[in-house]
Length: 281
Image (cartoon, rainbow, N blue to C red):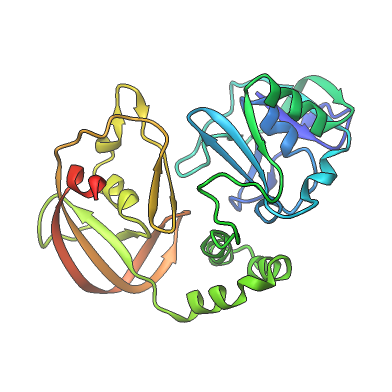
């Protein structure tokens, strides 16, 4: 496993509180990802980091954000034994709850030059502003729900940070905060809502109803949800499955990136859907 840092000569990495609001040592099986996180930055406000079909997609969201990567850093190698991937965690990272001893440390003189070497070898794709992959909107409004979610999960000041970086998103943020959210709940049986964990998109709701629908011999089906469009990364989608889908609203507490505990439930509608037919629409 790899860990990137701007600090050299570390012999032990200690758990600290970060995005997931718990004390973890973060690592990744990919050295490029480790180097990306070795630089102090504004995270999603500066760049998008995705994995599509096993390839890293590194996108500069705003002009000049990549300038800070013209700096040095350190790439640490760690024993993978204690690291694990948690539910709802991004696939590129793993965590350990214990102190981790460093196996080796490699100084990197220029991180961007190293990342460009990875790109030249075909291991990643780098998009420099204003170029972006199709799944990132040109005005970065995909950050609105993400940063509202960060705020709801306890990252105070997340929305303020978003609006400072992108004041043009103010209207979208305030509209989103003022309007009630619609959620989805899926079950195999009609008129049965036994566990009120709801989701902000239908595919996560289906997975919440039955994880096996997304698990096949070739692994988990991975997808991103942008503007209610589903971008699939891999998998065989010939699933002849029927579900009942509920559109609901009510008070909620966010428990993960896309799931919520809902109280005072109001069912807006319920319909039987076929998974194959839904994906083909």
